[in-house]
Image 1 (tube, each protein chain N blue to C red):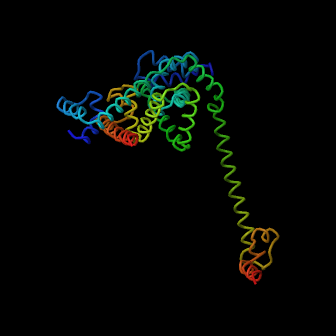
Image 2: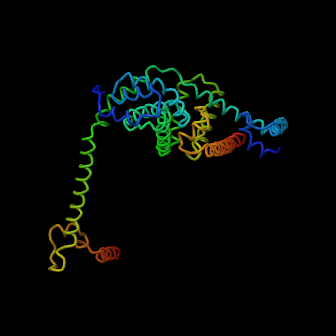
Image 3: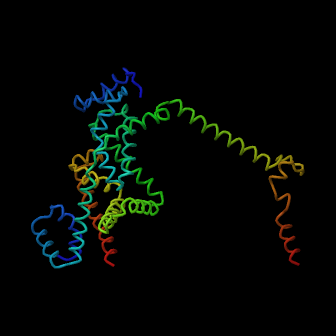
Length: 207
Length: 146
């Protein structure tokens, strides 16, 4: 990591960063300067929310970890382009959402059945003592994430931000660059659709 | 309230966002309908799964792994010359492809309006119709069968 402070870049960032508090501003300057402890500070502040979001989108702990790493790399790579027109957290969430949606698209291209099957076998190997109840729980979680996955992108994003990040409508609207009423409508439809998909799964299991 | 109405509102009931009248009607239905109360249990389980997944375990090595990725991948990302060379390489491949295509087309189409009827060595091998026209191919097959 480069330790040389690029004065011009920092002066430039001084002009554009006007929408954030002092400590955030200092952190961004240090990130632009490439200071390692600043990188660690940002990761410490955002690791949990970013991982939660990734978990909501991917439904898998391993995928969430890989995706979260990618998101932080993207944040560090792009920090010079941050203009301070939104808060740092909103900006990071936007990157996280975009990366997650791209990841899901990529994952859909893979043989999804094979992926799930491999995960099941791995789970069974790891937990020989796993009770039927745990297997049912895993199947249930897989069904839940299949249902989340099947939602249109905007509904899925609103749902994950609301349920996994516990965000207010206004915060979701900010991240998705839309109105609060649109978020309300997206969430309403997301929940109805999710319920419908899960009911299909429930009916199959009854037979 | 009937079953399909329950299926529409169940998630809102479980979240506690239904008004009193709807909530009472839905609860009354759940008491009498095994299928809907089973589905309600499943939906409740789904919301619990989300709650569980929201808990992120402590992981002190995460920052180290991200920083290690930065160190290992930094060159490929941050050196602008890399992308310049990459674009130059793509352009070179395209130009090479176009010239190769033009030369092959030139060879295959022969000398144009001043064509003498004689085949060049390359033309003979590229265009296999000169080696075995389709008519003689079928003719030979026919003769073989006879």
